Length: 348
Image 1: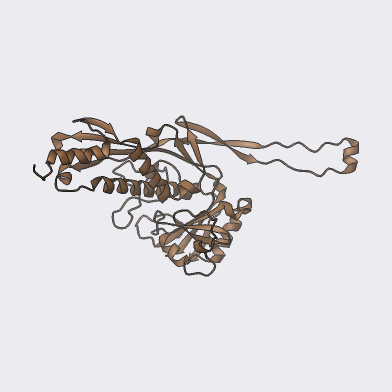
Image 2: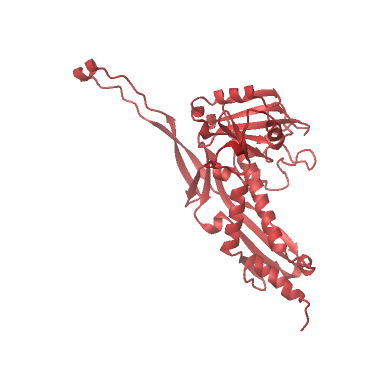
């Protein structure tokens, strides 16, 4: 019996591994186990998935309440009690934000020749790449999302392969147009670093949060990679190895400064101008950091498993290829925009 693997058999083996028992033509879905594995990788690599609260959504749109005003407390003296004097009434003032599930989707044609010439590990390679890219895109969306479709006014600027790879593409339905992320949603007064990210700038940012900074455990500072490297050299950074054995450490967490957890990410751009946006000439050289109360952002996840994440599989024999179609529904909103402070004009 020949030890050579027949091309058709090898092709079918890879397709079966990727998409379960595939039909000769037509669309098939990956098995649930594969989708759940990719979800696990995404949640591990996008630290904001674990950092921010999540809302299960059983319908496309949900209105989420938030407080817009608090109750008042008054003194109550013995004389007031004896006189039957009641404290002045006050009520919670409420508002709401709308979470809407929207879809991120990719279209990935794969030539059968890739399978034909011994790419036995194709499944693992594709699975890891899809998960890694989805995790990065999620992080970029939550940080940089801007629904402004006039690209010159979008905080990310227009896409440029060399000078602005994180910009918005005018030739495609760019995923960064789905929601307004943390950078766009912030309404607290921004801090002008005017140089390297300093402890003074961080103190000013903490002060700018007001009452939202009362509990430092509820704060997170998110910085670009270049700033992360600089922070690793300051003595005020309490690195994760000094947290203690019971500490919970998320992927990307580099330590704490003033009790605030610090996270590094490659999703924050470093080609901004002093105001924290991409200039029209794509010649910015500044970075930006985000200080946020972690209970203000809210991620929405569909309760329908197939819409949470799935990969469609379609065989196209006339083109000698098959197509993977990964898609995910996600919602995002910020309850308290004043609970986000941007530290801009950082020299990187």
